[in-house]
Image (cartoon, rainbow, N blue to C red; front, side, top):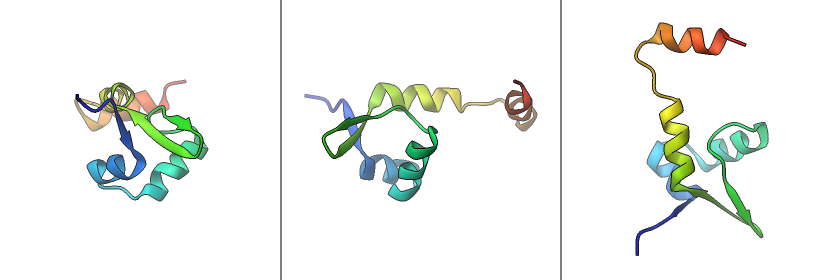
Length: 70
């Protein structure tokens, strides 16, 4: 059976960020969508892939134009 979700620690390791960064992103409404089941937070792989695909840019100017657009 393949895994459908990553834990906070697994995603932090995969992206080379700290779990605290993911916690801060959640409180700010940034980062991939997540599930909170009781006290456990997991990130569905589908949501991680969606978040990553939205972060893909062809150039730095493309990203600057996207960020400055309303």
